[in-house]
Image (cartoon, rainbow, N blue to C red; front, side, top):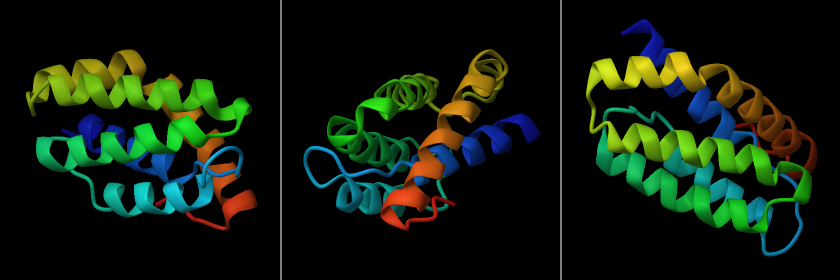
Length: 121
């Protein structure tokens, strides 16, 4: 249970820290993503699906140096959505992908704060 909560936090932080304006309105899209990811419960498939939609928009306008980080976050979020709230699957996903998702989230969050002045929490 604790691992799933930690993963949800990492996912939320990762989504909230994506900023840098290149192509499209990255900062504006990042803000919409940040709103969609607030208080995200990774077991809530409806909210998770909405967050994924916003993340896809942001990833398209993301700076080149964050494209791989966004892909990592999106892949993880889609796997979490496929788990359909199954606790065991989410724990396994966290165990397998948690570290790389955490690093991607940190990179996104740092640039979001530095470039777009958005705190992804």
